[in-house]
Amino acid sequence: AGLTRRILVVTPSNLLSNWHAEFGKWLGGTPHELNVSVLKKTTAHLSVTERLNLLVRSRAPRHNITLISYEGLERHGRHLCTGEGLDLLVADEAHALGHTGVRQRALRATPARARLLITAAPLSNDLSELFQLYDLARPGILGTAAHFQIDFARPIEGASAVDATESAKAVGTAAMDVLNDISYEVKLGRKSDVLLRGLPRKHTLMVMCRPTEPQRRLVELLQPVASGAALQALSLIRTALLDPEELISTAYGARKLRHVFEHSPERPSEQMAWSGKLQTCVRLVDAILRQRVLDNDKVVVVGDRLNVLRRIRSYVVSEHGTGLDVTLTGETDVDERMPAITRFNDPTSSLRVCFLIKQLAVGINLIGANHLILLEPAYNPAADKQAMERIHREGQTKECYIYRLACTGSIDETVLERQTRKGGLLDMLDRKPPKLPPAHSPDRDLLFKLDGPNIASRLYERLPTDSPYADMSVWV
Image (cartoon, rainbow, N blue to C red; front, side, top):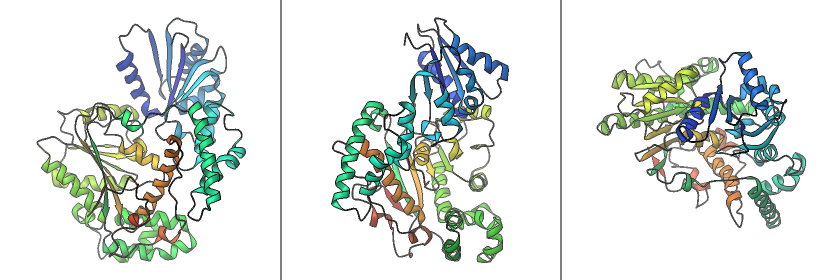
Protein backbone atom coordinates (compact mmCIF):
# COMPACT_ATOMS: atom_id res chain seq x y z
CA ALA A 1 0.00 0.00 0.00
CA GLY A 2 2.91 2.36 0.68
CA LEU A 3 4.02 2.21 -2.96
CA THR A 4 0.52 2.30 -4.44
CA ARG A 5 -0.42 5.96 -4.40
CA ARG A 6 -1.93 6.68 -7.81
CA ILE A 7 -5.01 4.49 -8.25
CA LEU A 8 -7.69 4.69 -10.92
CA VAL A 9 -10.92 2.70 -10.50
CA VAL A 10 -12.95 2.31 -13.70
CA THR A 11 -16.54 1.15 -13.23
CA PRO A 12 -19.97 1.32 -14.86
CA SER A 13 -21.41 4.80 -14.31
CA ASN A 14 -24.23 3.58 -12.06
CA LEU A 15 -21.68 2.16 -9.59
CA LEU A 16 -19.58 5.29 -9.03
CA SER A 17 -21.61 6.23 -5.94
CA ASN A 18 -21.34 2.65 -4.62
CA TRP A 19 -17.55 2.70 -4.86
CA HIS A 20 -17.32 6.11 -3.19
CA ALA A 21 -19.54 4.92 -0.35
CA GLU A 22 -17.51 1.72 0.09
CA PHE A 23 -14.23 3.65 0.43
CA GLY A 24 -15.86 5.75 3.13
CA LYS A 25 -17.31 2.69 4.85
CA TRP A 26 -14.15 0.59 4.99
CA LEU A 27 -11.34 3.17 5.05
CA GLY A 28 -12.97 6.35 6.36
CA GLY A 29 -11.42 7.54 9.61
CA THR A 30 -8.37 5.24 9.32
CA PRO A 31 -4.78 6.46 9.64
CA HIS A 32 -4.42 6.09 5.86
CA GLU A 33 -4.80 9.49 4.25
CA LEU A 34 -7.14 9.04 1.30
CA ASN A 35 -7.98 11.51 -1.41
CA VAL A 36 -10.95 10.00 -3.28
CA SER A 37 -12.24 11.88 -6.32
CA VAL A 38 -15.32 10.95 -8.34
CA LEU A 39 -15.38 12.05 -11.97
CA LYS A 40 -18.98 11.97 -13.16
CA LYS A 41 -20.62 12.85 -16.43
CA THR A 42 -21.63 16.19 -14.92
CA THR A 43 -18.04 17.07 -13.98
CA ALA A 44 -16.76 19.92 -16.14
CA HIS A 45 -14.46 18.85 -18.98
CA LEU A 46 -11.62 21.09 -17.79
CA SER A 47 -11.91 19.76 -14.26
CA VAL A 48 -11.69 16.14 -15.50
CA THR A 49 -8.57 16.96 -17.51
CA GLU A 50 -6.91 18.67 -14.55
CA ARG A 51 -7.69 15.84 -12.15
CA LEU A 52 -6.40 13.11 -14.47
CA ASN A 53 -3.21 15.08 -15.17
CA LEU A 54 -2.76 15.55 -11.43
CA LEU A 55 -3.29 11.84 -10.80
CA VAL A 56 -0.41 10.69 -13.02
CA ARG A 57 1.95 13.52 -12.03
CA SER A 58 1.32 13.76 -8.31
CA ARG A 59 4.07 12.95 -5.82
CA ALA A 60 1.93 13.85 -2.84
CA PRO A 61 2.22 11.54 0.20
CA ARG A 62 -1.51 10.83 0.33
CA HIS A 63 -3.12 8.09 -1.72
CA ASN A 64 -4.81 9.55 -4.79
CA ILE A 65 -7.81 7.42 -5.74
CA THR A 66 -9.87 8.51 -8.70
CA LEU A 67 -13.19 6.93 -9.69
CA ILE A 68 -14.28 7.23 -13.30
CA SER A 69 -16.82 5.52 -15.55
CA TYR A 70 -15.88 3.51 -18.63
CA GLU A 71 -17.42 6.23 -20.77
CA GLY A 72 -15.27 8.81 -18.99
CA LEU A 73 -12.12 6.77 -19.62
CA GLU A 74 -13.00 6.51 -23.30
CA ARG A 75 -13.33 10.29 -23.57
CA HIS A 76 -10.47 11.43 -21.37
CA GLY A 77 -8.07 8.47 -21.08
CA ARG A 78 -5.44 10.13 -23.25
CA HIS A 79 -4.59 12.46 -20.34
CA LEU A 80 -3.32 9.43 -18.39
CA CYS A 81 -0.62 8.66 -20.95
CA THR A 82 1.69 11.41 -19.67
CA GLY A 83 3.70 11.74 -16.49
CA GLU A 84 4.54 8.75 -14.31
CA GLY A 85 1.44 6.73 -15.08
CA LEU A 86 -0.69 4.83 -12.58
CA ASP A 87 0.42 2.54 -9.80
CA LEU A 88 -2.79 0.52 -9.99
CA LEU A 89 -5.60 0.35 -12.55
CA VAL A 90 -8.79 -1.33 -11.27
CA ALA A 91 -11.49 -2.39 -13.76
CA ASP A 92 -14.79 -3.31 -12.11
CA GLU A 93 -17.37 -5.57 -13.82
CA ALA A 94 -14.59 -6.55 -16.23
CA HIS A 95 -16.68 -9.24 -17.92
CA ALA A 96 -18.71 -6.46 -19.58
CA LEU A 97 -15.72 -5.20 -21.56
CA GLY A 98 -16.40 -7.44 -24.54
CA HIS A 99 -13.89 -8.91 -26.94
CA THR A 100 -12.77 -5.70 -28.62
CA GLY A 101 -13.95 -2.14 -28.95
CA VAL A 102 -13.34 1.22 -27.39
CA ARG A 103 -13.35 0.11 -23.74
CA GLN A 104 -10.77 -2.61 -24.26
CA ARG A 105 -8.52 -0.25 -26.21
CA ALA A 106 -8.88 2.48 -23.59
CA LEU A 107 -7.82 0.12 -20.79
CA ARG A 108 -4.93 -1.34 -22.76
CA ALA A 109 -3.69 2.16 -23.59
CA THR A 110 -3.69 3.28 -19.94
CA PRO A 111 -0.17 2.85 -18.47
CA ALA A 112 -0.15 1.19 -15.06
CA ARG A 113 2.34 -0.82 -13.01
CA ALA A 114 -0.40 -3.24 -12.03
CA ARG A 115 -3.90 -4.10 -13.20
CA LEU A 116 -6.73 -5.62 -11.19
CA LEU A 117 -9.80 -6.85 -13.07
CA ILE A 118 -12.84 -7.54 -10.89
CA THR A 119 -15.66 -9.77 -12.07
CA ALA A 120 -18.16 -12.23 -10.66
CA ALA A 121 -18.54 -13.88 -14.07
CA PRO A 122 -15.20 -14.25 -15.86
CA LEU A 123 -16.74 -16.69 -18.31
CA SER A 124 -20.33 -16.52 -19.50
CA ASN A 125 -20.58 -17.93 -23.02
CA ASP A 126 -17.30 -19.34 -24.32
CA LEU A 127 -13.61 -19.56 -23.51
CA SER A 128 -12.65 -16.61 -25.71
CA GLU A 129 -14.03 -14.35 -22.95
CA LEU A 130 -11.53 -15.84 -20.53
CA PHE A 131 -8.72 -15.21 -23.01
CA GLN A 132 -9.65 -11.52 -23.26
CA LEU A 133 -9.59 -11.05 -19.48
CA TYR A 134 -6.31 -12.91 -18.94
CA ASP A 135 -4.65 -11.14 -21.85
CA LEU A 136 -5.79 -7.75 -20.55
CA ALA A 137 -4.50 -8.50 -17.05
CA ARG A 138 -1.22 -10.03 -18.23
CA PRO A 139 -0.67 -9.61 -21.98
CA GLY A 140 0.63 -12.69 -23.74
CA ILE A 141 0.13 -15.18 -20.92
CA LEU A 142 -2.05 -17.37 -23.19
CA GLY A 143 -0.29 -16.55 -26.46
CA THR A 144 -2.22 -15.05 -29.34
CA ALA A 145 -5.97 -15.38 -29.77
CA ALA A 146 -5.42 -17.77 -32.68
CA HIS A 147 -3.09 -20.00 -30.66
CA PHE A 148 -5.53 -20.00 -27.75
CA GLN A 149 -8.29 -21.30 -30.02
CA ILE A 150 -6.07 -24.11 -31.30
CA ASP A 151 -4.48 -25.09 -27.98
CA PHE A 152 -7.41 -24.68 -25.59
CA ALA A 153 -10.81 -23.53 -26.84
CA ARG A 154 -11.41 -26.03 -29.63
CA PRO A 155 -10.15 -29.14 -27.77
CA ILE A 156 -12.15 -28.29 -24.62
CA GLU A 157 -15.37 -27.42 -26.43
CA GLY A 158 -15.00 -30.42 -28.73
CA ALA A 159 -14.60 -32.73 -25.76
CA SER A 160 -17.98 -31.67 -24.38
CA ALA A 161 -19.91 -32.42 -27.58
CA VAL A 162 -22.58 -35.11 -27.36
CA ASP A 163 -20.77 -37.29 -29.92
CA ALA A 164 -17.23 -36.68 -28.63
CA THR A 165 -14.89 -39.68 -28.93
CA GLU A 166 -12.80 -40.94 -26.03
CA SER A 167 -9.72 -39.57 -27.80
CA ALA A 168 -11.30 -36.10 -28.07
CA LYS A 169 -12.28 -36.22 -24.39
CA ALA A 170 -8.72 -37.11 -23.42
CA VAL A 171 -7.27 -34.23 -25.45
CA GLY A 172 -9.84 -31.82 -24.00
CA THR A 173 -9.10 -32.94 -20.44
CA ALA A 174 -5.37 -32.42 -20.99
CA ALA A 175 -5.99 -28.93 -22.38
CA MET A 176 -8.14 -28.08 -19.34
CA ASP A 177 -5.38 -29.25 -17.03
CA VAL A 178 -2.86 -26.90 -18.66
CA LEU A 179 -5.34 -24.01 -18.65
CA ASN A 180 -5.97 -24.64 -14.95
CA ASP A 181 -2.26 -24.34 -14.18
CA ILE A 182 -2.03 -21.04 -16.06
CA SER A 183 -5.17 -19.76 -14.34
CA TYR A 184 -3.61 -20.18 -10.91
CA GLU A 185 -0.92 -17.66 -11.95
CA VAL A 186 -3.32 -14.89 -12.88
CA LYS A 187 -6.69 -15.57 -11.18
CA LEU A 188 -7.57 -15.07 -7.53
CA GLY A 189 -10.99 -16.51 -6.88
CA ARG A 190 -13.27 -16.84 -3.91
CA LYS A 191 -15.80 -19.63 -3.70
CA SER A 192 -19.38 -18.60 -3.02
CA ASP A 193 -19.38 -20.37 0.34
CA VAL A 194 -16.53 -18.09 1.46
CA LEU A 195 -18.11 -14.90 0.11
CA LEU A 196 -21.50 -15.72 1.63
CA ARG A 197 -20.21 -16.84 5.02
CA GLY A 198 -22.30 -15.30 7.76
CA LEU A 199 -25.26 -14.48 5.51
CA PRO A 200 -28.73 -15.97 6.08
CA ARG A 201 -29.70 -18.97 3.97
CA LYS A 202 -30.75 -18.51 0.36
CA HIS A 203 -33.36 -20.69 -1.36
CA THR A 204 -33.45 -20.73 -5.17
CA LEU A 205 -36.55 -22.19 -6.82
CA MET A 206 -37.10 -22.96 -10.49
CA VAL A 207 -40.78 -22.13 -10.90
CA MET A 208 -42.01 -24.00 -13.99
CA CYS A 209 -45.04 -22.19 -15.43
CA ARG A 210 -47.39 -23.93 -17.84
CA PRO A 211 -48.18 -21.75 -20.88
CA THR A 212 -51.81 -20.73 -21.36
CA GLU A 213 -53.81 -21.88 -24.36
CA PRO A 214 -53.46 -18.47 -26.10
CA GLN A 215 -49.69 -18.68 -25.63
CA ARG A 216 -49.67 -22.13 -27.25
CA ARG A 217 -51.64 -20.81 -30.22
CA LEU A 218 -49.26 -17.88 -30.64
CA VAL A 219 -46.19 -20.13 -30.66
CA GLU A 220 -47.86 -22.39 -33.23
CA LEU A 221 -48.64 -19.41 -35.48
CA LEU A 222 -45.02 -18.27 -35.26
CA GLN A 223 -43.58 -21.54 -36.60
CA PRO A 224 -43.53 -20.39 -40.27
CA VAL A 225 -41.38 -17.41 -39.24
CA ALA A 226 -38.75 -19.77 -37.82
CA SER A 227 -38.10 -21.35 -41.22
CA GLY A 228 -37.02 -18.05 -42.75
CA ALA A 229 -36.02 -15.64 -39.98
CA ALA A 230 -34.76 -17.64 -37.01
CA LEU A 231 -33.59 -14.77 -34.81
CA GLN A 232 -36.82 -12.84 -35.30
CA ALA A 233 -38.81 -15.98 -34.51
CA LEU A 234 -36.86 -16.61 -31.30
CA SER A 235 -37.50 -13.05 -30.14
CA LEU A 236 -41.22 -13.26 -30.94
CA ILE A 237 -41.61 -16.68 -29.27
CA ARG A 238 -39.86 -15.55 -26.10
CA THR A 239 -42.12 -12.50 -25.99
CA ALA A 240 -45.22 -14.69 -26.42
CA LEU A 241 -44.09 -16.95 -23.58
CA LEU A 242 -43.66 -13.97 -21.26
CA ASP A 243 -46.49 -11.60 -22.17
CA PRO A 244 -48.80 -12.02 -25.20
CA GLU A 245 -49.99 -8.43 -24.77
CA GLU A 246 -46.43 -7.26 -25.42
CA LEU A 247 -46.29 -9.37 -28.59
CA ILE A 248 -49.54 -8.22 -30.17
CA SER A 249 -48.66 -4.59 -29.45
CA THR A 250 -45.81 -4.89 -31.97
CA ALA A 251 -46.37 -4.11 -35.64
CA TYR A 252 -46.00 -7.80 -36.56
CA GLY A 253 -48.28 -8.97 -33.78
CA ALA A 254 -51.01 -6.44 -34.53
CA ARG A 255 -50.98 -7.47 -38.19
CA LYS A 256 -50.65 -11.25 -37.90
CA LEU A 257 -51.69 -12.36 -34.42
CA ARG A 258 -54.39 -10.07 -33.04
CA HIS A 259 -57.14 -12.48 -34.14
CA VAL A 260 -56.03 -14.99 -31.50
CA PHE A 261 -57.75 -12.83 -28.88
CA GLU A 262 -61.38 -11.82 -28.99
CA HIS A 263 -60.75 -8.55 -27.18
CA SER A 264 -57.96 -6.57 -25.56
CA PRO A 265 -58.02 -6.84 -21.77
CA GLU A 266 -58.60 -3.62 -19.91
CA ARG A 267 -58.28 -4.64 -16.27
CA PRO A 268 -54.75 -5.50 -15.06
CA SER A 269 -55.96 -8.86 -13.72
CA GLU A 270 -57.22 -9.78 -17.20
CA GLN A 271 -53.85 -8.90 -18.72
CA MET A 272 -52.13 -11.24 -16.28
CA ALA A 273 -54.50 -14.09 -17.21
CA TRP A 274 -53.08 -14.33 -20.73
CA SER A 275 -49.66 -15.46 -19.47
CA GLY A 276 -48.71 -18.41 -17.30
CA LYS A 277 -45.61 -16.56 -16.11
CA LEU A 278 -47.36 -13.31 -15.25
CA GLN A 279 -50.10 -15.19 -13.38
CA THR A 280 -47.40 -16.87 -11.32
CA CYS A 281 -45.51 -13.62 -10.76
CA VAL A 282 -48.49 -11.69 -9.40
CA ARG A 283 -49.57 -14.65 -7.24
CA LEU A 284 -46.12 -14.59 -5.65
CA VAL A 285 -46.24 -10.81 -5.15
CA ASP A 286 -49.75 -11.07 -3.68
CA ALA A 287 -48.63 -13.73 -1.22
CA ILE A 288 -45.57 -11.74 -0.13
CA LEU A 289 -47.50 -8.51 0.37
CA ARG A 290 -50.50 -10.09 2.12
CA GLN A 291 -49.13 -13.03 4.06
CA ARG A 292 -45.78 -11.55 5.10
CA VAL A 293 -47.04 -8.10 6.03
CA LEU A 294 -46.11 -8.50 9.70
CA ASP A 295 -42.55 -9.44 8.73
CA ASN A 296 -42.37 -6.48 6.31
CA ASP A 297 -40.95 -8.76 3.62
CA LYS A 298 -40.10 -6.99 0.37
CA VAL A 299 -39.75 -8.28 -3.19
CA VAL A 300 -37.76 -7.32 -6.28
CA VAL A 301 -39.24 -8.14 -9.71
CA VAL A 302 -36.52 -8.29 -12.39
CA GLY A 303 -37.22 -8.23 -16.12
CA ASP A 304 -35.76 -7.17 -19.46
CA ARG A 305 -38.87 -5.44 -20.81
CA LEU A 306 -40.06 -2.14 -19.42
CA ASN A 307 -43.64 -2.45 -20.70
CA VAL A 308 -44.04 -5.83 -18.99
CA LEU A 309 -42.81 -4.42 -15.68
CA ARG A 310 -45.26 -1.55 -16.07
CA ARG A 311 -48.16 -3.97 -16.57
CA ILE A 312 -47.19 -5.93 -13.46
CA ARG A 313 -46.93 -2.66 -11.54
CA SER A 314 -50.43 -1.67 -12.72
CA TYR A 315 -51.74 -4.92 -11.29
CA VAL A 316 -49.95 -4.35 -7.96
CA VAL A 317 -51.32 -0.81 -7.70
CA SER A 318 -54.86 -1.98 -8.55
CA GLU A 319 -54.77 -4.70 -5.89
CA HIS A 320 -52.63 -3.14 -3.15
CA GLY A 321 -52.76 0.62 -3.68
CA THR A 322 -50.13 3.25 -4.37
CA GLY A 323 -47.01 4.14 -2.42
CA LEU A 324 -45.73 0.57 -2.11
CA ASP A 325 -43.39 0.39 -5.10
CA VAL A 326 -40.34 1.92 -6.74
CA THR A 327 -39.19 1.38 -10.32
CA LEU A 328 -35.53 1.44 -11.43
CA THR A 329 -35.06 1.60 -15.20
CA GLY A 330 -32.82 3.28 -17.73
CA GLU A 331 -35.18 6.24 -17.52
CA THR A 332 -34.29 6.75 -13.85
CA ASP A 333 -31.70 9.52 -13.56
CA VAL A 334 -28.33 8.25 -12.29
CA ASP A 335 -28.36 10.73 -9.40
CA GLU A 336 -31.84 9.55 -8.35
CA ARG A 337 -31.03 5.83 -8.25
CA MET A 338 -29.04 5.72 -5.01
CA PRO A 339 -31.61 7.73 -3.00
CA ALA A 340 -34.36 5.44 -4.33
CA ILE A 341 -32.34 2.34 -3.41
CA THR A 342 -31.63 3.75 0.05
CA ARG A 343 -35.34 4.38 0.66
CA PHE A 344 -36.25 0.87 -0.49
CA ASN A 345 -33.61 -0.71 1.75
CA ASP A 346 -34.83 1.22 4.80
CA PRO A 347 -36.86 -1.27 6.89
CA THR A 348 -39.11 1.56 8.12
CA SER A 349 -40.02 2.63 4.58
CA SER A 350 -43.46 1.84 3.15
CA LEU A 351 -41.83 0.66 -0.10
CA ARG A 352 -42.21 -3.12 -0.47
CA VAL A 353 -41.87 -3.82 -4.22
CA CYS A 354 -39.02 -2.84 -6.52
CA PHE A 355 -39.39 -3.24 -10.28
CA LEU A 356 -35.90 -3.51 -11.75
CA ILE A 357 -34.70 -3.61 -15.35
CA LYS A 358 -32.10 -6.38 -15.49
CA GLN A 359 -29.47 -4.22 -17.20
CA LEU A 360 -29.32 -2.01 -14.09
CA ALA A 361 -28.81 -4.94 -11.71
CA VAL A 362 -25.02 -4.79 -11.98
CA GLY A 363 -23.45 -4.06 -8.62
CA ILE A 364 -26.43 -2.53 -6.77
CA ASN A 365 -27.53 -3.70 -3.31
CA LEU A 366 -31.22 -4.31 -2.65
CA ILE A 367 -30.88 -5.94 0.75
CA GLY A 368 -34.13 -4.40 1.92
CA ALA A 369 -35.83 -7.22 0.00
CA ASN A 370 -35.58 -10.91 0.76
CA HIS A 371 -37.63 -12.14 -2.21
CA LEU A 372 -36.63 -11.79 -5.88
CA ILE A 373 -38.59 -12.87 -8.97
CA LEU A 374 -36.68 -13.32 -12.24
CA LEU A 375 -39.19 -13.24 -15.10
CA GLU A 376 -37.19 -15.06 -17.80
CA PRO A 377 -33.80 -16.75 -18.21
CA ALA A 378 -31.09 -14.93 -20.16
CA TYR A 379 -28.91 -16.36 -22.92
CA ASN A 380 -25.98 -15.02 -20.91
CA PRO A 381 -25.96 -16.72 -17.48
CA ALA A 382 -23.87 -13.87 -16.04
CA ALA A 383 -26.85 -11.53 -16.44
CA ASP A 384 -29.07 -13.87 -14.39
CA LYS A 385 -26.36 -14.38 -11.79
CA GLN A 386 -25.89 -10.64 -11.36
CA ALA A 387 -29.63 -10.08 -11.00
CA MET A 388 -30.16 -12.88 -8.47
CA GLU A 389 -27.34 -11.67 -6.23
CA ARG A 390 -28.93 -8.27 -5.60
CA ILE A 391 -30.68 -9.29 -2.38
CA HIS A 392 -28.30 -11.89 -0.93
CA ARG A 393 -25.42 -9.61 0.02
CA GLU A 394 -23.64 -8.22 3.05
CA GLY A 395 -26.15 -6.54 5.32
CA GLN A 396 -28.99 -8.97 4.59
CA THR A 397 -30.61 -10.19 7.82
CA LYS A 398 -33.41 -12.44 6.49
CA GLU A 399 -33.56 -15.75 4.67
CA CYS A 400 -33.77 -15.06 0.94
CA TYR A 401 -35.98 -16.63 -1.71
CA ILE A 402 -35.18 -16.47 -5.43
CA TYR A 403 -37.92 -17.49 -7.89
CA ARG A 404 -36.70 -18.18 -11.44
CA LEU A 405 -39.70 -18.37 -13.78
CA ALA A 406 -39.58 -20.55 -16.89
CA CYS A 407 -42.24 -21.81 -19.33
CA THR A 408 -42.37 -25.61 -19.38
CA GLY A 409 -41.50 -27.40 -22.61
CA SER A 410 -40.18 -24.25 -24.28
CA ILE A 411 -37.05 -22.38 -25.28
CA ASP A 412 -36.82 -21.24 -21.65
CA GLU A 413 -35.83 -24.74 -20.61
CA THR A 414 -33.34 -25.03 -23.48
CA VAL A 415 -31.74 -21.75 -22.38
CA LEU A 416 -31.45 -23.08 -18.83
CA GLU A 417 -29.87 -26.29 -20.12
CA ARG A 418 -27.24 -24.29 -21.97
CA GLN A 419 -26.65 -22.14 -18.91
CA THR A 420 -25.57 -25.27 -17.05
CA ARG A 421 -23.03 -26.04 -19.77
CA LYS A 422 -21.66 -22.49 -19.73
CA GLY A 423 -21.43 -22.69 -15.96
CA GLY A 424 -19.60 -25.98 -16.35
CA LEU A 425 -16.88 -24.26 -18.38
CA LEU A 426 -16.16 -21.97 -15.44
CA ASP A 427 -16.43 -24.72 -12.83
CA MET A 428 -13.77 -26.73 -14.63
CA LEU A 429 -11.17 -24.06 -13.81
CA ASP A 430 -11.64 -24.73 -10.10
CA ARG A 431 -11.48 -28.52 -10.26
CA LYS A 432 -8.51 -30.79 -9.74
CA PRO A 433 -8.59 -33.10 -11.64
CA PRO A 434 -10.57 -31.17 -14.27
CA LYS A 435 -14.07 -32.31 -15.19
CA LEU A 436 -15.61 -31.88 -18.63
CA PRO A 437 -18.62 -29.52 -18.77
CA PRO A 438 -22.04 -31.11 -19.45
CA ALA A 439 -22.70 -32.24 -23.01
CA HIS A 440 -25.08 -30.06 -24.97
CA SER A 441 -27.66 -30.87 -27.58
CA PRO A 442 -27.59 -29.10 -30.96
CA ASP A 443 -31.28 -29.83 -31.60
CA ARG A 444 -32.50 -26.66 -33.32
CA ASP A 445 -36.19 -27.59 -33.21
CA LEU A 446 -36.22 -27.38 -29.41
CA LEU A 447 -35.71 -23.62 -29.66
CA PHE A 448 -38.90 -22.95 -31.59
CA LYS A 449 -41.49 -25.52 -30.52
CA LEU A 450 -43.55 -26.17 -27.42
CA ASP A 451 -43.78 -29.63 -25.92
CA GLY A 452 -47.24 -31.09 -25.41
CA PRO A 453 -49.16 -30.15 -22.25
CA ASN A 454 -48.78 -33.71 -20.95
CA ILE A 455 -44.97 -33.39 -20.75
CA ALA A 456 -43.93 -31.97 -17.40
CA SER A 457 -40.45 -30.77 -18.37
CA ARG A 458 -37.81 -31.30 -21.03
CA LEU A 459 -35.19 -29.94 -18.63
CA TYR A 460 -35.09 -33.02 -16.43
CA GLU A 461 -34.73 -35.34 -19.40
CA ARG A 462 -31.50 -33.65 -20.53
CA LEU A 463 -29.68 -32.33 -17.48
CA PRO A 464 -26.94 -34.34 -15.74
CA THR A 465 -27.85 -35.83 -12.39
CA ASP A 466 -25.57 -33.37 -10.55
CA SER A 467 -27.19 -30.32 -12.14
CA PRO A 468 -27.85 -27.46 -9.69
CA TYR A 469 -31.46 -27.39 -10.93
CA ALA A 470 -32.16 -31.00 -9.98
CA ASP A 471 -33.70 -30.42 -6.56
CA MET A 472 -35.19 -26.95 -6.71
CA SER A 473 -38.08 -26.97 -9.16
CA VAL A 474 -41.76 -26.26 -8.55
CA TRP A 475 -44.53 -26.71 -11.14
CA VAL A 476 -47.48 -24.31 -11.14
